[in-house]
Length: 591
Image (cartoon, rainbow, N blue to C red; front, side, top):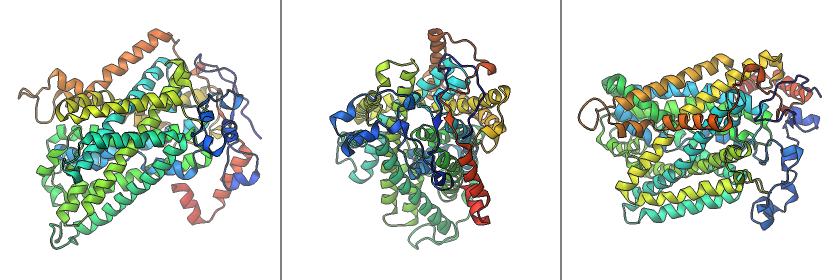
């Protein structure tokens, strides 16, 4: 077994002594078939009974004992290959795509909608590959936040960790409210939304009891449903554009691209810029693959494949579905006005296509998918928020009580505090005051994703610089980002440009300011950009608190917590793929 013999300087936030984390077992067949991990993280987990592993016994709630195997990551590594693949391809698809695209279409027009999503898609492609490369080498809890602390700056990592936690912390009650109001499509106000809020909150608590596997199983099946819905929409959309719709609908004759030709770019450049924030919201959560990788059974096999599948999600599920949305629904459609902070599903262009086509029952199917999607994103909020808070506590950036991981692998107190935030959803039963509250809460997380994605790209750039400076070779990196460092520069630059576009629209909003002039007022501006001063405040606070020395390239620690790769077995797997038939080589390359 080949081991890396280079040494690197250590940053204070990490131990100088390298404790490698195995990527494979010792079975040679594993290298050319299914790759397994050593399982040292899971040793205590498998000592529990079945019900204990499910988190349903008193013993499962006790603190997980420390050992060398879980020094850098106390979470379970029990997530299966199918889980990681589905999280990658469908995990973050939710109300941002199904409902938010309606308001974006009305502001910017179909051409702006499609181009903006493509731009964000290019950015996300590079972000996910950069994160995949680093997460595979460093399977530490906390995902990208710990990588930013390690490769960029501890105080900026502190800001990004809290920024990411707050993003999910405030998203959870919002998603519960959205789900309850989506049910109103069927109940028409006959049932108090607070009843559905309680039902959905109880469901989230129940699933969270099962820890990583509860989240992974829910994401697998909900992603399957979401992908089925999008594929059927694309097929139906193609038929409708060609005029193959029912005779009782408006798509019974050739429809073509007349809507894009008539009003492709609505509201000009300002409308074009305004769509970016909706597109970013729709892609938020894609980076969860980095968190999930630290809890995967077979990371070296599944993570590269999962990263490649993000490309297909962007191309097939976002771009194609939005192409048909733009072809079939007018940007001037009055029904799109209903889109608001509580995501009225009646304003969903996906629902409207079913209605206008005369497809009986299709609008109900899409509405049911929206409900499941929203709950799925809410659970992602519990998962992402709890893991990030635990990582912050482990690094001394949050109260130590949140570093508690129980024997079934749950970050117990972090999960409890995030779930407790869900009770804030009941404030949404008062439509006017509730919407105002959630407008402000979402303003904190509105730009959070852009900071996250830009920081991941910056961390990858500095990681590669340190790797080269400290005498390492590219052959020592088992999985490399598709476009390498240039791809990360593209992702970083696009993050900055989209941020500038959002600031521009926040100052000069579409339709003008509330006083009838062109400029927005202070309240409107901060409701769009509050995340920016919050991040800067955390950055300054982290610097004052920890006083970290400037992290130069030479001082970046490349060893602590790095996964130990069995290169002989890794090369055997690569040789198996290289010697496969041409069709299989294409499959390996693309998936």
